[in-house]
Image 1 (spheres, rainbow, N blue to C red):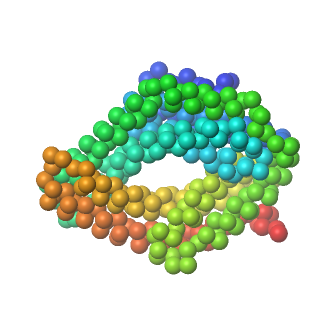
Image 2: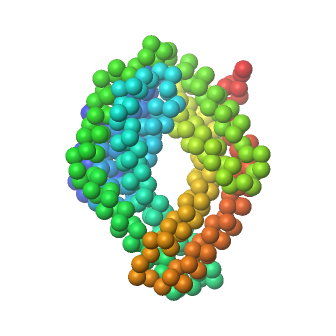
Image 3: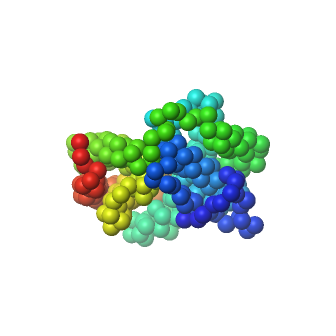
Length: 318
């Protein structure tokens, strides 16, 4: 994780190297609105820092810019009690559109970099592998062209500048934001944790049933990253809780990736031109079988990991 000092818009590195998240420095006794300002500022800064890397097609830059927008939205959600977001309602479609455009490229990158290499030769022979890889690379080219158009125009840059201006003018801060970050965190983290636990599916082997848990775990993890340091917890316990959330989110993320690549494989067959359709169709089946096999293991892992996400004892009161 990097550090960002000074202004909200950091200059990207000269070589366009993608930048990870910036480290927040939050004072436990300061108003929670100050913490929100810092978190929103850093999320927008991360988006700006990866603008060039994303626009030039670097997979990690695309990923990091998408993470930045997700962190921005997660902050709005986790701290909604102290944020009046009416000032950016008109900007939300732009945020969603940019996030979707980044996601269209990212899903293909995950398929090419992670899913396809995991499928063995016994499951996918060279001809079929070549067919689906060719179709995926064609889709990435098309999705990347759409993202380049979005990022090379003025609209995307103006969107981030407008979000940065909204963050900095602080007209979003409500009177409820005067409470200390520590006091707010002691109420908010347990509430988010309970929501996540209650979303556990009745059938743990139902992959779709874990979707809501995944969304809530992601929000809780981002909130915990910001709030845990503000609490008077033993460092070992705070780290153990954060680590358990990370493990759960990673597992549920992999489970969601399996669903996404199955949908992607179906789209590749529907969009394909210039490839042997019999090979591509057979490859789609191999991808679906591979995702199904992994899904069962990941559901089982999630069912074991969720109870291990134990809220630190001092936060369980009430």
